Every structure is written in C-alpha cells, then in structure tokens.
Image (cartoon, rainbow, N blue to C red):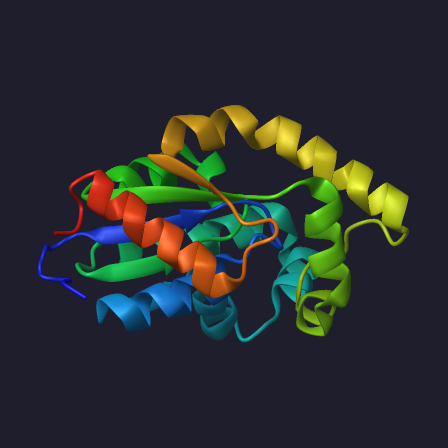
Length: 184
C-alpha cells in the first residue's frame, strides 16, 4: 500500500463502531503508525476510562484526552482512533482535520449496543451505558442525535460498518481515501 503521502487518518464515531479494530487494520495495510487516544489516556493516567470518569469526572478525562489528541495529531503517516466524544472539543476537531482525512464510522444504535454488550473489555474499562438493552439503545440514540452535527462537520466521509467485517470496512476506507486523492 502506498503510504508515501505525509498525513494522518482519523477515525471518529460512537463507541462500538470499530474505530480501534479498523484503525489497527488500516495502519498495518498502509504501513503507518497506529494511535488509540483512549489507550494513550489510560496508559498516561494508569487508570481505565471508567476509573477516570469515577475519580476525575468527565472534565478530567476530557483534559487528558485533549492532550492525547494534540500529541498524536502532530504525527505524520498515522492512523488515529479517537474516543467517541473527542470531536466535541473544537480544538480536537480542528487538530484532527488539519492535515488529516477524517472518517466517521457509523452503525444503527441497536448494532452498536449489540457490539458493546458483547465486548467484555468495554464493559470493564469504559463508563457504563444503561444496563438494559432497550435503555442502552435509547442512550445510544440520544448520543447519536447529540453528536450528529459535530460528526457531520468534522468528517470528510462516512462509512457504515453494519453488516461489514473490520477488513471490509478497512477496504471501504482505502477506496474512499483513493477517491478523495489521499492515497495514490
């Protein structure tokens, strides 16, 4: 894969959309670095995101997330998987767009809830969504509505991940990068 252009690829979207999984695949295919801002925050803090929310609140987490986004956005030839709410900060959104191609990974709330519910790691390390399936889906719908405008402003393209494997999503992203002149 030709990764000779000096730029970055940022993946945004709600929890469960596959940003980290697809990001790792894309980084391997492009021979670029991979950075997961949630992993960076957890490593720097020595706490899970859930523990950070419990001990420092959302504001404390967002401050660490902002530092992580700023650090990885200075990199070239990098794939960046962001936390679902990272783009709510206008400075994060601007940093991701500067010299970058931003892909919004999407799925219906029911599919996101299915993925989140099946991910033991997410249950252990992320802030809780409401515990029942219908309430969790409703919470995801609210988040989707609340963030829709920001996601649409920040993204260059949108990729529906529903009914696609992570490899198929990565294929779609690469096709879109080529179509937009990001890759040769």
